[in-house]
Length: 602
Ligand code: OXD
Ligand code: MN
Image (cartoon, rainbow, N blue to C red; front, side, top):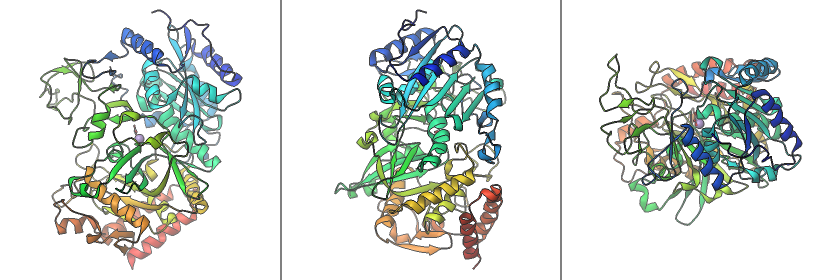
């Protein structure tokens, strides 16, 4: 394969630190050539052609899916590997009880051995990228070195890349040093390491998005949360969306849910039939990550540091997410879905019926009804198959995605998947109580999911796998931000997943969730109907607009019910969890737990 650029096509940067680091890493990985990504359309085309020629991606049907490509990962490399993900802080205690920890020296040595010579015969791409609009005071620059064109093509969608980032970085600018090599894709040598004190990420032996698109979870959450604590802001696993009233007034919500709980669908919601007369419009700012700062008005402002969506394909259809369906019609990379004979793609629960044949996510011939040796049906697309697509193509995208100061946040929403216990929605009593609600948030496995039914996984602020330091310190940081805020956003908790006695969902979800967002925003602006309960304010049944939704009074009552017996059990489970943070748990969180426990016992 001819070289993409001549090797003397050097960096157009005056940043000595960057040049030295690139040569140091090249000396370790020994690539045949180094290519600096400049970010042009012409370069994109060259990269695509080269990736097609090497087989790293397949060009899809350009008439039906213009600009779209297809990729398969290795069979054992289809999701984030939390067990192989480490925080390498100098002191073990700084990583806290929720992270795997490795000493920095050991991390560099262990992964260094895997990186050694790993790019022999390959190209090392240098990808300068900005998380957030280039030059915004919110934004952070990173540089990813990688031997995967698939990673480069994805980074081009998910972040802002190229010469303009180097120009902004200048001679002295700081950047996160991100090193990635597919190496041998050996799961036994896979490591995703974060060195927060060195502003460095090393990822080796994986090709799966969440492990290798280092601007995403690794930089924008794990490293950024560490930096955010030092610099006085918040890096969160949250969608950002705007709700516009017909008079043009827009209010923004930031919401945290654990992975695969519908953040992308909520961020792109389309108003349900019954609420259409109210003329609401939804604006999508982000579907996964929010960086939030206190601005000069004393309020909390948020940006989405990404410029694309890396969404789960199965279940994406015109009912669950029409805006996503429209977004992924062009310039999209599909990973681990079914490849159809006409070089288009398919996944379970898409708009189309299953095709009569195709190649599954492992590259094997597939047809409907195919079973494995145990008689289980074989999925065409992997359950975690993905689309990588430009945010700018989303019909509901907010032009404020590019605003350097982001959007003002009126409400913060936490949510989990709970079959019981948590009501459809409730409002916390204060910022401090809201932080306690976020800290104890949980998701429960239902019969529809793998694992033991009813098993509760606590996932504070949906940040359990993503907080780059001790979570006790993280809760303290949230409390400090609350003290500094003059205009304090209200904090809510939602649960779309409550079940009835027959195990059926009580709430229809999807677009209908706007009814709950409407109540939330009403609560932020005026004291619309709510009843005080021991856990917070819950809507009075007539305060929710149910026009056009056929939900019985009994079911609505069940959705809003606070069962004291269940809640007292919940409090014991929360207590066990909070104890794991030891002396690092802020006393204010214990106080909120104790007061809530007392209110429930009264
Ligand atoms: C996740 C994701 O795993 O966004 O949370 O990919
Ligand atoms: Mn996520």
